[in-house]
Length: 86
Image (cartoon, rainbow, N blue to C red):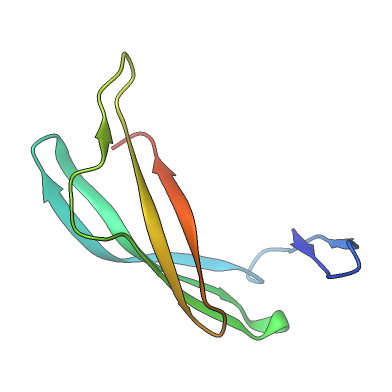
């Protein structure tokens, strides 16, 4: 969904949003995607999202990858990435 500054919610249909992994990191627990390109052409959004160097595995009962991310491109910012199933 796309949420406008006025808080209106607009559904995104097939092909209106793409999320593609562009870089990977080899870790002791396996290979994980750590760089992504996110595009929403109808909203002029083209982002690159990247995790900093490091090993961010949470090794609890169900291990998963979690890390901070930097966002660049049409918008800038910081965020959080959590990956399961890797």
